[in-house]
Amino acid sequence: MDTQHPDLHPLYAEHLATLVARADAALEHAGFEHLVIAAGQPHYQFLDDRDYPFAVNPHFKHWLPVTRAPGSWVVYTPGRKPKLVYLQPRDYWHVVPEAPAGYWTPHFDIAIIHEPAEARAHLPRDPARTAIIGEPNAALDGFAPNNPQGVLERLHWWRSYKTPYELAMMRVASRIGARAHRAAEAAFRAGAAEFDIHLAYLAAARQGDNDLPYGNIIALNEHAAVLHYMQLDRVPPAHAHSFLIDAGASFHGYASDITRTHAGAGPGADDFAALIASVDEAQQGFCARVRAGQSYPELHIHAHHVLAGILKEHGVIRMSAEGAVESGVSSVFFPHGLGHPIGLQVHDVAGFQAGPDGGTIARPPGHPYLRMTRALEPGMVVTIEPGLYFIDMLLATLKDKPAGKDVDWDRVEALKKYGGIRIEDDVVCTEGEPENLTRGAFAALHHA
Image (cartoon, rainbow, N blue to C red):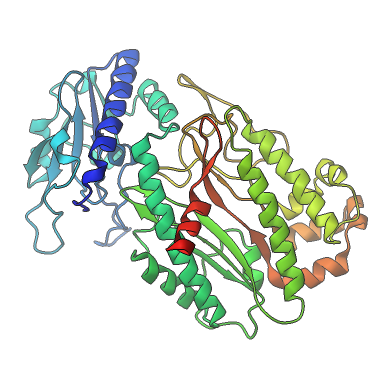
């Protein structure tokens, strides 16, 4: 637990005041008197006494930068100081969580308990009047999470708008991720296997697999065509044509999500590098459109047109960009969504939510994997991650369709050994120019 951040005191105080105001409004709307948030409990593997890596309830870490305190609770009643019920078990089998310390502690009444059941004495007496947020296994005697929809809808909606404190946490997470990306690229250039590139990333980030916000995608050559490739070969390929890395970092419960693609050396490498450069330029153009009022689905469709133009420019298709989008050809090469909300979770909540009272904004027809359908507003943070891939299964389907005649299949065959390209940044929508957290982090590394 980081304790040395005096500069965060005013930012955190403002952040907590925002959460209190949001909680007050959500409780009043839904008719509850208290808000209680469970950090959660470990989940045990089937027929075993080993637990899975603990993942804290995102609502819990929204209130305070504590991510490793299973069995703990946040208790809030309007008009009162928030309370942290903090479990420090008497345990010589495992590491006991450190005592609470740091810039956030003066803002809480803190009760230390040593057995999970002791928390019940610090929770509201009447569960029926309490909004209890958490997983079922957090339940205590007579006190179980009820996750009232009317409260969750509002809290999720407002989570879309990051406070200055949250943006500060995400800037640090971006800097950690950028530093680790540089180390991973160096390992790739040195001829390392996927597994060793992954280890270089972890070492530079100073984070273990379970600290990361998601499992690293470390893909060489054709593996880059597998969108969620996580096999991590232990032996390097005979020739490293390309390297795609999708990897982030965590800081005080907040995530970064960064993807870069690099060309190797050898015949054809300059050609693939030129394709990467075209996608990178287009991606920066999409990032520049992260502005208030921009429809995210419309930005996604715009990206399809631009990427289809790149495919034509580089000789992969012969049809117009408009024809490629209308016929679905662009979706063969760009089969996922442009991005997603990010914050406390990599794929953060409320990406489809119509308003604070819930409801859903449907995806545009033909784009089933888009993860956000809202219009952008100041305070939102989204990823922008266009890609072009050469995926055998999708290409085989296209080849049998009439539109397949407008594809240069020899060109496709030459590019398949590179797998694919994805470029991803985390971008803040502001009142004016967007803030690119990822590019800013890489720029800071360059000038350090």
